[in-house]
Length: 201
Image 1 (cartoon, one colour):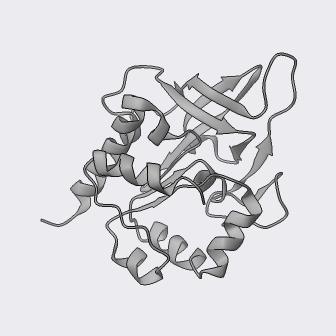
Image 2 (cartoon, one colour):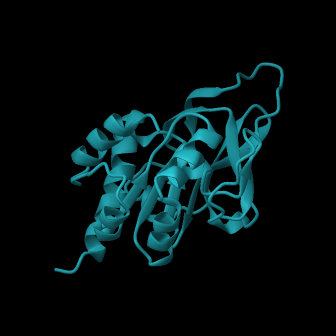
């Protein structure tokens, strides 16, 4: 949904060879999976289900294959969203919530914001400065039941929300690394480097 071209370009710069596919067989053969997305929750999960991709994605993550969700690709991993009525993939326990209106904040939360690392040793953050700036466009944010899977948060107005999650082979970010300049490229490079380490020589 949406930002495939710019994500592919970012992954190529990070040293990967991306292949855009709807094929469950190709997902099975891939060294890693990146699920990007912009847009609304319900059409995105309906799109995956109509193409028979829900189960292959779940199986790939369960198998230990490196997985990176981006923006909507993070949100649809959760059980449900305040944005829609469709169930999410339910891979992560928790819900997607909408920012509360406040004086002096914009919704959607759009533009640069500073990550506050809650898993500073995560592979995603290697070779980054502390509290780096990354680019966001979203009105909804994920709220995991298990706080330990949060890898970073951001603060918008008085609301501090999850900006990234990381648990074993599963990583996902609310921001757009492909729009986050050198910081975003480094994050993609960190993911690609982890994938390379897992590929048998």
